[in-house]
Length: 121
Image (cartoon, rainbow, N blue to C red; front, top):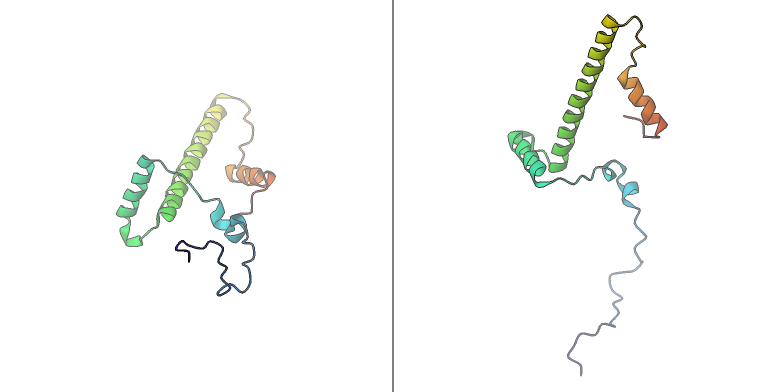
């Protein structure tokens, strides 16, 4: 008699059919696939602090990071549009001809179409 485990035992109970191949992550969860973000300790601590400040809303870490990124990108876009408008006004006052001002939202949408990003819902 052998006292060790027999690795060659086959069990026939429980598995009637083999599990089909799983779809890749980008097909199973297309909205969540591109949302994996690595944070360093300092930023992670700030995200946790934000969750603490907004504790009645019970944000998850992923939701908090998404909200903070959206707020940061909005601030960046507003600052950029303000700076472009300021330069445009300055050149308009000083120079005789100014090229027409391009709408930043239209330019961003055009660039997104050129890069084949999915349409915004």
